[in-house]
Length: 508
Image 1 (cartoon, rainbow, N blue to C red):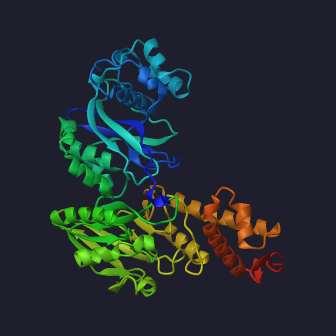
Image 2: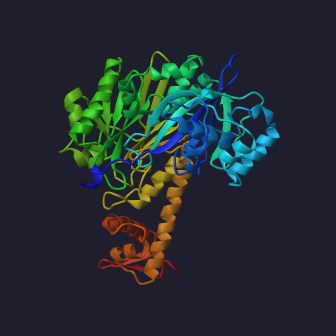
Image 3: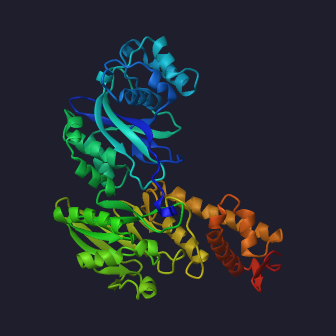
């Protein structure tokens, strides 16, 4: 089995709560996850989390015949930990101050949830929750959750309060208002949240039943092309890419007309997967306009010819990319730096304004695409959601790459990064700053290695890439060479016969 055929990660058990209030004018409560988290940092979500060992030992009324009883306990506990709202029989006897102190005791580990319930003579009851559909993180992602969703109404007299930590904030709003924020690019959410909000926007009565009526075929379609922003879909396809990535994100953008960005998989089963997605769009009355290539690497162009043959689509790329792959993939038109690709949806009046940015560094003809209305930046391989970006001379140039990252920071509207590999980044400026800081740190390490007597890329890699598997040292060596070339341009390093030394002039 090769690296690209490894089995998907096993999903972890989790539960989330759709908390509602005001039956006459329903509002839903969502939270913004902390920008420092490792999973879905900066995303908006419903309160929830993973199953704990103790959860299976906590009694639950009306649980006979329920195979998900323990997950209902998880949802109730997580709701209390994250918002201070406790859904239990007898909770009306407790003051808000008492609930707050109990929450503090639970979160600080001074008491377990089961003990808390016994001490306060409270009982959990499955009848207080409505079951919503269960969602599993798609197999393409390294971190996966099997999440059960439930809904409940805010108990009378209680308040939802988020304490800074794993969560940054919480907010009550009408479902239609939440969806509008998503459409406008103000928030980043995932498919289960979108599905719940859309069902709630049609009315809170029976909304979970309506959600359960969605067939498996439609659910599969929703999960195979994740709509991260309205009209911006991500389809992770397995490709021969660089570990730890195993997939390349093919993006589909638009309304009545769609563009397809980086259909990178050469594998027939993955091409068929993308075909099914595109055929569903066509059946819904949408038209395919063209294929756009961000850069020349095989894991971004491997499926282009298949789509050209099947749908008779033109191909667009930067001139330098077209010249490099002309014999392999014909390019019908060049995309110039600053070009605007405009897509519309007549029924809503919405526009997608894809501004092409020439962002060399990873590749000479690399393009990024900035959707100006929502601030969504399609980064190709300038920034990725998993692993690191390899700068491999002569195609790669670190000086150009750093300039491209800084150009991203100059964008006036930047709300999310949609990378070529891995999950969407909802903290865009922080991630780009991290990239710049990492490159600066690596430069210091290389200068220190040179001062310690390491004068060849291989010996520098052995000294500073101690946390990287030796199987990846060849790629690391290319990045070191890119840094050394920049340091030579800066006058800090000189090279003779393949060896590198600190420049006496540069350090005076």
